[in-house]
Image (cartoon, rainbow, N blue to C red):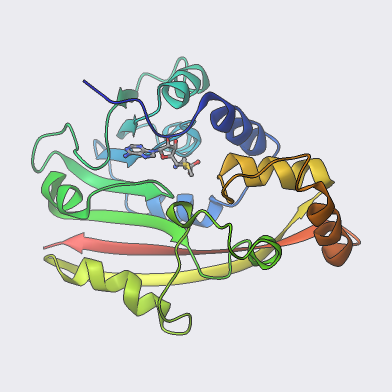
Amino acid sequence: MIVPKGDTEKQAFLRDKSIKQGDDKPNVYIQKILAKLKPKSKLVDLGCGTAHIIEKLARRYENALYTGLDISEAMINLARNNTQGLTNIELVQGDGLELPFQSSEFDIVINRLADYSLADVYRILKKCGYFIEYGLGPDSDREIIEFFPDRCEEESFFFPEDPVNWKKEVTEKINELAFCNIKIEDYKCKDYYKNKEEIMDLIEMVPLLKDFDRKKNSEKINELVEKYTEEQGIAITWHYYILEAMKL
Ligand SMILES: C[S@@+](CC[C@H](N)C(=O)[O-])C[C@H]1O[C@@H](n2cnc3c(N)ncnc32)[C@H](O)[C@@H]1O
């Protein structure tokens, strides 16, 4: 039996809203995955959330088979709505730390910002199959962390021990298993938020901070908005990496 955890209904709603408002951050990631797909490839997205990644893949490349796994019932319900009519997608409620799949079942395993077990990823990948991970770089959301340094929800974030050589830390875990062709690239951009409400939605969606309270923390958010407002909106750094590795 699955112990209910993962994103709550509110988080799921906020993430779905943010993605549908035109969050195009995963574009590079999607291109990298598309480059690896072949006819009849089997791909699984661990912690698929609202299923926006596999939904885009399934529309652009119809010849592969896609599975989305997420532990949250709220997310799986949203994912079902978002992928209606796509017969090449299967959705599973399950735990990324204990994958309910057979060994050597998939050609590609992908993960974007969700919990998983790397040993299990290795187990379910076929020989020469690819693992493609989208994770956070150390500068992500740094403007928010600057205002709430002690309240950061470390579980939702990657805090490297060495902020300069952090890529080494990310690839170390991969090097412990028999992977080759390991590649990591990082990307940085600014996201522009229209108003204070959108910044607070972002904080609650991740969640970025411990014990965040929209009323109690209102003043601090005002200060942040004042400091980081530019012509296009409130500028918040988005820093991510894409890691690719092939199972030997
Ligand atoms: C930050 S969201 C990312 C969702 C999606 N990958 C995306 O890029 O939009 C994290 C997701 O991981 C799910 N999750 C958290 N812990 C999990 C676990 N142990 N197994 C599977 N999914 C998990 C959450 O329910 C949530 O949908």
